[in-house]
Structure formats: C-alpha cells, structure tokens
Length: 209
Image (tube, rainbow, N blue to C red):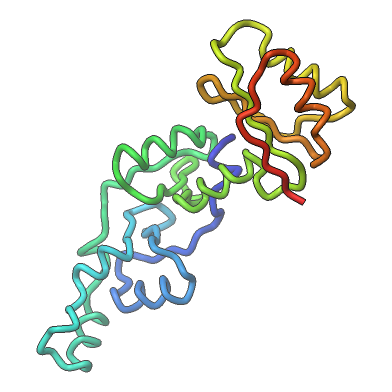
C-alpha cells in the first residue's frame, strides 16, 4: 500500500505570514493538529498544535485577554514553524512513512510530488490503513492459526483448505509463526476442524456479524 492511498489530499495550508491566532483558529475549526506552510506554491514549513501552545501565553500569565489576543494576532508562524520538513512522495510505501514518523518522533508528513504539496499523511491515516488492511470492520471471521516452524507450502495448504470449502480469503497477514486470515462468513466451524486435522493450532477466532 502506498502513501497516496491513505493520505489526506489537498490539506489545509497556511502562508508564512499567517498569525498564531489564525493558525489556532484553523486547527480548532478543522480539527487538525498540524498544518503545512506554503509559499508561492512550494512547501516552506509545517506548524503543529504543540508549537503554537509553546509560544502562547500560559493561563497563569499576568497579561490581560486583550494583550494576549494582540500578541497572538501579531506573531507570524514563520517565526516558529519547522522549516526543515521531512516529506514523502505519493508513491512512498506506507511502511516507509511509518518508519520515518517513528524514527523522527513526528505525527505527520507532508506529501510532495514534483515540488508541489499534494497531501499529508498522519498517524491517524496509518491507523485507519492498518484497520482496513486487516479488514477489522468487515463482516466475517478472523482466524489466527499457529503454523509452528515456517516451512514451504504452509500458506498454500491452509488457503487450499479454505478454497475447498468454497470460501475466499478477503484479508491475510503473517506474523512470525502466526497466520491471520479473514473470510467473509462467520460460519467457519468446518474450516476450523479441517485446519486442526492438518496439525495446526487455532489460536483465536473473532466473528463480526
């Protein structure tokens, strides 16, 4: 799966001369935590909700409400935004984007194509993609099989059992010695028995009606 399949296309943006007050209002109205900053069509930086809070007066300040609003309406985001932005391309693998976020401890990456901002990929997008890949919201059964020590033909054998019962595998994942299979029916008792007869252990069965 690629970034372009999960990113938010045409994200909300700000210009470098936008104020902190404007950025906070946009984040609040659109329920976003980070906004790319664009100058003349090119990505110039990114500003996050955390950065805005860091430069905003604390509740314990002696400043009046009018003074606070004045400061927020005068301070430009170009003075606080991150200018060296880590980006990805639309054809970047989702795993690569996830690794970049993890390594750099950031929650989102602007997506740039030929110098132009085309989207943004965030932690939430990746969580949604994971749920979609695993088919967790889909009707059917999720079967986790312990296939023991990996050996050639395991996947073919287990999928062959399911095919023999006239069913299709809608989602599939392998993790260490576990094979996670989702089929589009909850009536899987015969399949479970057939898998056990081949010597495999059923670790869990989750049925979604």
